Image 1 (cartoon, one colour):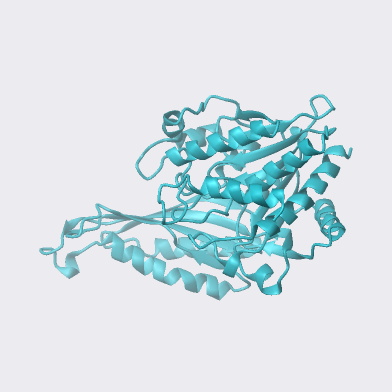
Image 2: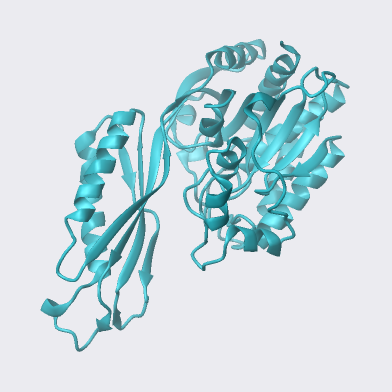
Length: 409
């Protein structure tokens, strides 16, 4: 095992300790105690690697290696460091750790780039605390307005500002980055699927990222006593929600072409064992490589939800996130493939069925993305694992790519 592999494993192991669910996977929600611990470690490592560290008004972390050209746009490299509840140690942090190691190679080789290199660690990509997802990247490019950011609340009613303040972050710091100051963005991520492992290919060069939307559905009924309210007199919000949710998969299956739909979050109120629920709130995640499929299924979901209005039931639906399918920059795709070939590392083209911060940046700058294999194709679970050798390979490819991007006019 080489030095880079050893550092990668140490970084990932240490970051995995910052979890609210020890022994039951990584749970690191944005602006939590575990977020604070992880960001402290990331910032200390950035400083150790010779980077100038700052945070923005969203809590995104930036470690900058200045370039020789004054006030030049930066080549950004990184990923997110939040997690889903009871997730794995590799989704997100792998990209942050790889970016740190790219910076370490710049330092080791005593390279001063023409254009600055910035390692970034992004918040709330998963949307596990405040919903919607991709919050850090959307905030940087300005597609999440400051007003909307301030109005976000978690399931306990805690606002983003309150949560940031609790861990010592400053929500008044600058937020939006002028896109003219973004030269490129590079991201490494675990595949979260089985293709690379099944084909025994260590590197996937991402060509495109699926389009996605996230909806929130609210079903309101009437609370009542579980023992004294007759079945024909009930307006049960949970039963209604279950009927809606049960029909959602058929909407995606009917559309076909790889379209998928998921309900992953369900809240029941008042959530008592002997009380008829008067309100349910659930998420609907829709994804497809074709935008027309996403748009059609959105309409189908709206019609389905609306059809349950009446008999004491009211429904509403809100779109929390919508992102079109995104293509990665062809020049960077070519560059990543060339660097893979230079190191004799087999690679293939691959599309992403998951959303990533890269898709947000792709509307504002040139973006490239690499995947590495996920063991058994698993992700968003404690069993999530990727080989440090594959990560080290990706670091070499990203280093050579970043070196060229920070030199090129």
